[in-house]
Length: 424
Image (tube, rainbow, N blue to C red):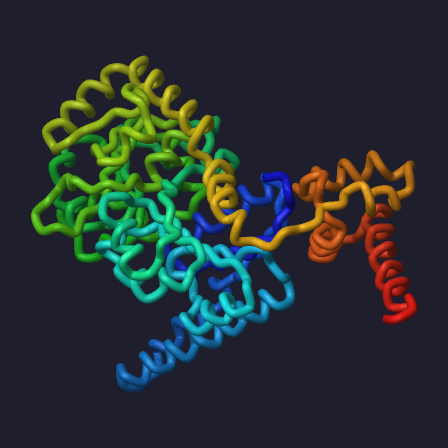
């Protein structure tokens, strides 16, 4: 697909799909599209403040629902201004059923990337039929359930990594002491992880992340009191750790190592960093990584054996990590995922007449090389239409250079000329 598209990425208020939404936006821009975010996190403080009111639970529920309706109206206002070809919502995006019906009525294409476990988070049942395209990270009977619910246009779209963020780093000795350990885990304290990691207490273990409240046995290994770790530091932890333990979450009682299907983002992010990981086997993992590109385990006994083997064999660690990184860069970046999603969504979006030579011919010849540099800097395709270029230039911060000024002047001239023509 060579056409430049306008895409509005609707972020959630908070949660795991928030950074994924930003990775998607980065990838779409990398592919040459014009991207705007609906910054739902900007509203999170006000939304959270509702819970501090000394009123009944029923009133809190009513107020929260009303707040989300206002956010949906704000998204619709953003759509009217930006005029996107596609509205891409991330899981937990504050887009109501009424707003989705309005977008469908107005023939604005919509897609959601549901990057959550459909069994744990069943809210998808209320929203999935109202999207034009519904991308998921699971297979099995999920597509059939979606079809039965009235959503026949679903697609499997596994998670990925952003190589601009998840990358190998040269760490200083201070950073290695600060972030490094023989074993580490970064993530939330699900019940299976609390039980499983107690069996790793004999190792040099560090646990990073939140939702470990009330944990006493692992408290000595929990870093910073269980606060949320920002992405930049997470990447440093990945790079500084000898063996990164990647245990998928499970909510099944007493199950330490689950038998789920989807592959979590940590798998791709660790591999993109060139960091060594041991990850529990997942049903969909063989479709994504070949033998020898990851170190795998099926139960706690295999995990301990893998740790013992790989901590004594740095060459083997490096070989596995290198193969895993090569696979991610070749097939599992967010640019790959967004390209796949847009190819599937192409028929949903309006046809666009791309006449690059038309408006570019109006740029003075001595500015043509500067135009190429500008398009590269703005991450726009050479075939971008004039309206999308103007939108991107207007939404920049800082002073305009002479070419940007000329482009905006040309836009104003076109508007004046258009309004002055007979019959206008």
